[in-house]
Structure formats: C-alpha cells, structure tokens
Length: 278
Image 1 (spheres, rainbow, N blue to C red):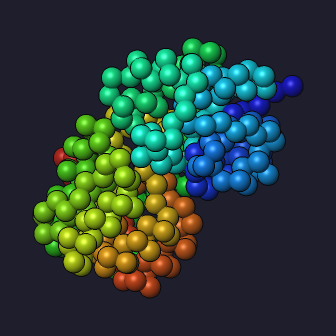
Image 2 (cartoon, one colour; image 1 turned 120 degrees about the vertical axis):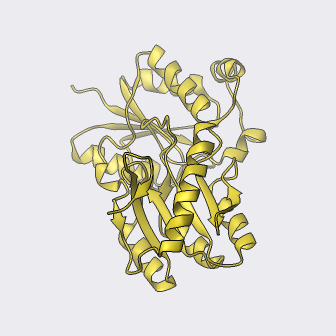
C-alpha cells in the first residue's frame, strides 16, 4: 500500500484544507494536532489523529514511525508567545531546543524539519496540493491604490523585506512613508492593531515573503479576519506579495474589503526590485 502523508498541524483552517485536498488525491492522512492550537475538527477530517503539546518532537516521530509516514507537511499557525509559558518539550524536543541559537521562526522550523528528515521523514511544501490558495497578482477590489498609496507600498515593501531578512516578521504598517508597526512575535493581527492606532486612519499594511522564504512552512497568510481588523482601525490598503502568501476565503475577503473601502492588491517585484501589480 502507498505510504500515508503526515501533517504537523497548527491552528486555523489551513490544516483542514490540506487534509481535504490530500484525501481527494487518494492519500491517507496522519495528523499530529497541537493541544490548544489545532481545531478539534482535525480529528474528524484526518484518517488518524494524534495530539501532542508544543515541543514534543519525540512523540511526533514515534507516531509517524508507527503509521509508516515518510512524507509530511507543516500547516497552520502556532501562537508564538506560547513558547514562553506553554511549551512542554520531551527529551528529543528539549535536546533540539537547546541546540537552536536564535529562537526565531525559520531557525526553529528548519531545525524541526531537519530532525524529522534525519528520521527518514521528508518535509514537503505546505502548498503541494493547494497551489490555488496562493495570493494572486493584481488588484482584487473595486478600488485601486492611488499614486500616494503606491509610494507607501513601495516604502513598506522594502522595510518588510529587511525585517524578513532578519527573520523578525513578514509585515509592516506604514503611513506617509513612516513605519508605524513592525511584526514581531505577536503576529500580523496585533501589528495591524498597533500600527492602525498610531495612524489614526489610512494605515497601509504590507505583507511579504522573507527573502529566504522556505515554502515548507511559515508562508504569510491573509483572510477575511485581516480585513475586519483593518476596518476596526480604519486601514486603507492591504498589499501582499503575490505567489508567496496564502489567501483564505478569497471571495469573503474581497466582499468585506469592498464594503469597507479597503484596497487589496497582490504585487510582484520587477527587475529593479520594485513592487508592481500590472
């Protein structure tokens, strides 16, 4: 029989979407859910589900070996601030944790991926069955960015790329070519709230991939909730790097943005490194 595919699941709907897509391709799915993060529906969607706590790498390996998993993906969010209070590593997880010098997203995830691959479990791109969820290029909403907004988008784009290069975060909030908030461990939603309050109105949110983005994990993601938060602080533009971010509930996002008068645009870099959408 064909070996099943594994999924190391965080929170949100992405793990459920992945499982559905994999099963449509005839794959048996073995899910590892994280207590307090993964949705309860995980157990109803996957063929087999095991639950672990943050840091229990040894258990993940044990369960995958038991089920003959040879390939897996990482999908879903982990509340990063939990690493200071809720992480309960087993011996394998603690050993790995102590070897990581910079406890930032890429360093942690790459270390876990390497540990799994050392056990013969290959880590695949989380979008391997879900290419249609990648953010499209172009203006998605009725409103287009103005010339002044494009100036801010270009400004924010380069700032976001730089914090991404440093593995700090993937989004910034700007207005009038001033940086109002930089994404850190608190995540994008909190960044939008912080920056939006400082902007008072017309905040521009720019979300990009890291220059060394690994498609196996941690892709930027947006959804209707992003628009709701922007609306609550009177934000005006959501600019996202096309093809390198996920978009959930696309039609709901567009409808909410049009209703709120928020511009949503997917951009790519031209040869000069400038963001363009046409």
